[in-house]
Length: 119
Image (cartoon, rainbow, N blue to C red):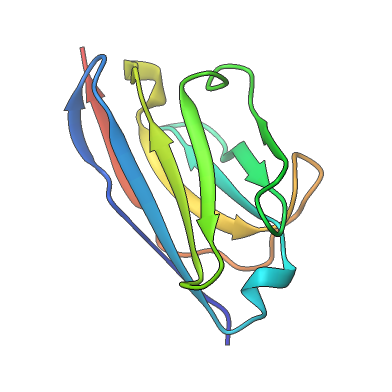
């Protein structure tokens, strides 16, 4: 049974940083690309970032490129999202998912972790 458990969210001021974590289980983690998504209040869920199986290639949504860094630890079945220079528009519920890029249609979702950036 696939499980994805996100953590690390919180309330931070504009310009601050947070590091999100996602613990994955129930599938061969090291064989799958992973992604982060977010859903702002009143908006649809959107893709944020992806990385390949060994993390050698990463891609980012334009608004977070240069501020966010996705990474993974295959030994621990973990994927991370380091978020720096946070802006109020980064506020939302953040999810990790199995898959690569905007064309991916993930099947499994965790409960997400809330990120709130105050102005």
